[in-house]
Image (cartoon, rainbow, N blue to C red; front, side, top):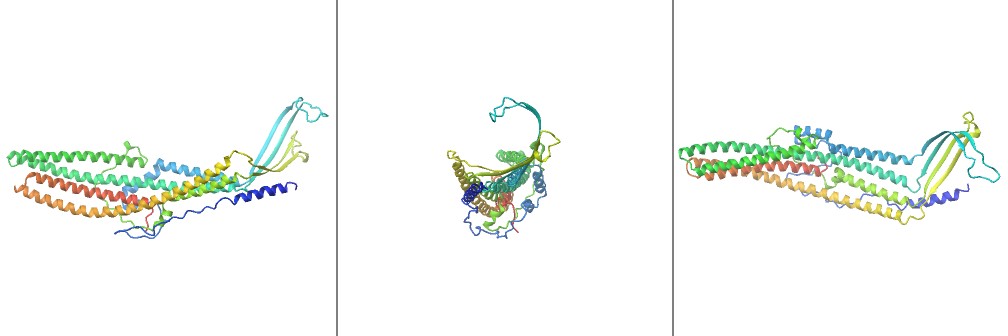
Length: 470
């Protein structure tokens, strides 16, 4: 009863300290109400609960689907993120356990000799040396009274950190799948471009044979023969360069799927896939869709809770402890009433002077929170930029693709007319070579625009957070 005033004073000081920690609220952001859209875009309905794991199926490519599944199973990068999530969850479990009492059981069995020359406890009572047994069994209970909020704020911080790790795992999965899709479509674009060049070399070889035959008959000059030979050699050089680029993309796909590059190969496929048109949600939907934004927001919550942990260090740490057990010299009397021992106590530890360490820790935590707020705003702004870049980029690429198709058809007509004029003797062979080069450039340009459109669509899906609104 004599301890009651001291306990009340300690509790009151701790309760006053709890009121100085700000309640966490996500910062408000000024977001535009809509995207800047051109045809064929439309605004979709928000669908934040949509699965982010199978977005690539909208391309309808079975090979890509299989590669994505292989990457999700074998990627060491994804395995690393999963391990970090398990660590964060284990930390949360350990921190949450601090809010519960700790129970312990202590046992001691010893035979010991007490020194006769030990310091006296009383001048009237001399010491004697004794040899005796000691048998003790005691249960201990310790519980920290979290009046200053240290344990509570630590648990909140651990919860936010675990949620952040989960969001980062989802973000790693999204980055893995989009990087794989981008490399895959770059490889497919090169396959289509190689097909164009291989068909062109076939035509150029036949033209070279024709010019060679005409040269032997005296109907074509040596200059015509040399020009056709130079055109063929230039196209063969371009073929070799493209094959080198294809190998690099193939090796990247191998690494992303968790396979050693020398053991991986992807058959050529010259089909020209088309990019799907994506509906778009509102800009504010990004705050829920994108896992990197979610991770940045959870980092803010964890940093805010760390302010509470640092603030709690200014107030006493109070622990309630108790012990109940038995202690005896002989096993037969170990559980007799005289062998009973117990204790109940309250301990408090308070820092009196630390040279400003606690204050510095608090300021460090506050500065850390401000840093996470700035990072959150940065991530949101980057997300807005990436989406708008994807929208405007795809619009421009689709317009360019239409123009490239028109140019390709025109180049084919020019080649047909030039061929007829050359065979009729109305045009020099240089015009025919120029027409062949123009058609080759137009065909390659069309294929390249197709590949850029596919890759840009992948990056737009990434910017949207991986989920595609209906």
